[in-house]
Image (cartoon, rainbow, N blue to C red; front, side, top):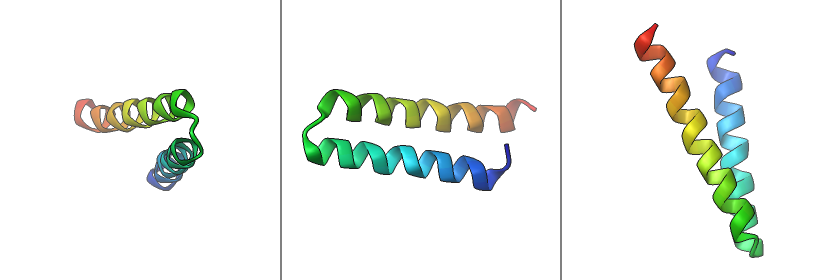
Length: 50
C-alpha cells in the first residue's frame, strides 16, 4: 500500500470518528479512533523495521 492510500485510509477513519463523536455514538467513535491510532502506528513501525 503506498503512502497516498495509507493517508486516505487514516484520514477517512479519523473523520468518521469525529462525525460519530459529534452525533453521540461514543462507542463507535472510540473504536474508530483506536483503529486509526493502531493502523497509523503499524505503518510507521513497518518503515522503521524494513
